[in-house]
Image 1 (cartoon, rainbow, N blue to C red):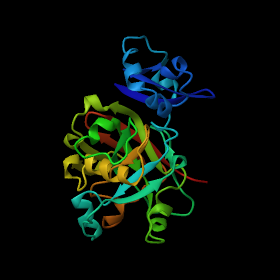
Image 2: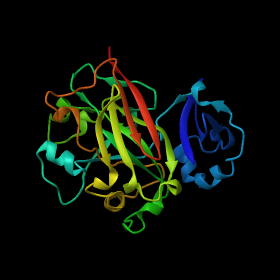
Image 3: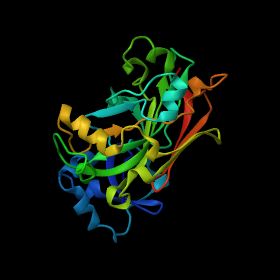
Length: 281
């Protein structure tokens, strides 16, 4: 199944993607206002009962929102591919490098990623997003994938000069509207092994990143196990699992996203997240 969040008129809802249309689950389950709440209420099983229903709205008649509009937490992983480690000149750490994003830093598929006024060093980072479906603490690696609701594409847009203001990444990683999340999540039953996926990022149609997800240093089960040791993972929590090599900051000359650009993150078996880039002002 594919599940998405969307806006129509003055209403935000979520639904089941059916071809180029949507079955509006938010209209059917009014006690669960968001997809996060729906997942927390055994939503995946409920969604299956609507697979044969006629859709309520065309995809092109709504605005897609970030897949999870109100996550309790977004945990991002840095330096998690060997080729990205190499291009940055860093060394592999014993444990994953973690930092956070905020929900307000995200946009949905088709919405503009915002290049902030304060910087011309706006970089792309195609990544696999992992969406949790169950609550768990100290989850073992062997059981980790059973806690996953699904997977989506993520563009972890980074404001590189602000990222380097301190040793902490956060200032450059959570400017308003700089990250993109979508277009939908594909449920985990359709992706039994996330390491078998392939990720490709394109800027204005040109491939700038391409990698198999089995080249991650810390696998998805390892990330879930490690992060859930720190605090419980909840339904709708998002783990953004790291970007492969090819980022704009490490090219010669650097390749930055600029006003008028178009950027795509495509992951096999999931889909393609596409966003225009618009300068703030």
